[in-house]
Image (cartoon, rainbow, N blue to C red; front, top):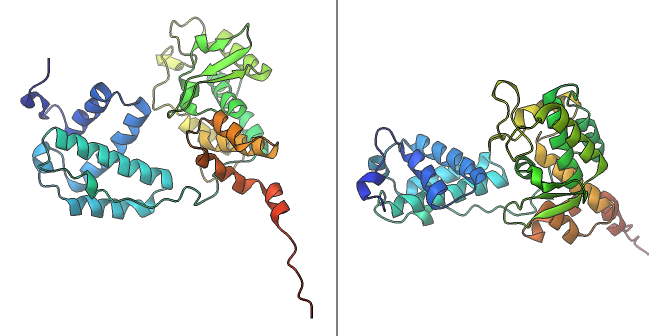
Length: 311
């Protein structure tokens, strides 16, 4: 049964933001990771402009939207600018559909020029990846779990979300393969089960995970143990600690820097851009071309001595 209009209006118990997030989850079937991104961007937008209720939303105009994006954008990275504008367009579309806006304001969100190749990949070296793998204390349950998760990223170049979503049925011990679900519109990935990965997983299974009924491989530990890791669990705080413990001074201390190291190493070993794009799950091969910027050995072959001037 379709809810009537009164049911859609946020009450004192249901904020405008909560209603929007419910709309994304239950009517649009948006991926949980995307919902997290949308929530942060829209929450800051609503708080900044004081738009806490649908009634106040009716006073929103194109200039306020435009000025907000222009004011926020210079402080953000390329990807964060994309998240900001796409989130605002999504929210404004929702608000218009629900009748909270008298007119469509999606077009008021300005297009922010963000060249795809505007910078170098913010990754770490392969030697630093090896130091990072030595940082978790594998004498502890948390260290064994985190080591296995980091090793999966370093071995296969997958995203942290794919590691978090890994299920027991994705590990084919007899066939010696491991499968990862598609991410961001990419394709499912299947790799050989590398011996170090198998050993790390077995150590975690036997000593820490046990026979928990969840299908997910990586679970919470401690007082609330045995639950699948939530969408917010990106090893963020732990990874920063491991970076510091390993003495790695990186601009971004996260899992994406490890993926960058994997891509750069593959390129240095002669892998094609198409192969790297497939492994990393890039939908558009242009995204992968940025790694050619850091292949210094190949770039040097393009540099020729400056021709002398003959008299």
